[in-house]
Image (tube, rainbow, N blue to C red; front, top):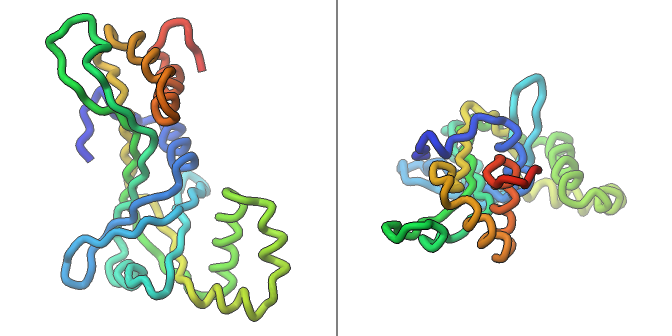
Amino acid sequence: MYQPPQFRSTDPHHARTLIQAHPLACLVSTDDAGFPVVSHLPLHLQEDGGVQVLLGHCARANPHWRYLAARPEALATFMGPSAYLSPSVYPDLARVPSWNYLAVHCRVEARIIDEANGKDALLKALIAQHEPAYAAQWRALDEDYTSKMLRAIVAFELRVLDLQCTLKLNQHRPESHAALHAAYRAGGADAQALAQWMETLGMVPGHKD
């Protein structure tokens, strides 16, 4: 990912927060002909002893898991909130429009999980993140049904080899911060989320996260 230094974050909390808040990832690798293939999948972040792992699964009918088995190195990208940046936030007129966004890219190495207990444990981790109350319903389902559902998917662990986090919020133009923050506070959900991130990063005097 292209990362101008003023937008690069090396704080692991920033990347972790974005991944957990926006878990629907683009998982990118290559097919057998070398052409890029993309699957849109929710991924669950786990950290153990400093090692970050993304847990996910796809339908068995989706050939992407076979590509991961053959070529384990892949890319998982997460897109956070984004919004238009109007040149009206600057005190001078010699400015152009842009776009602000938050994103995380993870270079990963895949390990396929295709045995029932491993897949069940992985699904429970996803359930715990998104709908903990559903765990009891999953456990109470008929065993034949759950076995059928587990056979229909292939799971994987994606060990994070490298991580890049970009927070593009016009950090290098402090003269725009107050007006940009006000505009985002008055905007839609994504814009308001960016305003909150500006506060978190200390870009707005008088606002503290």
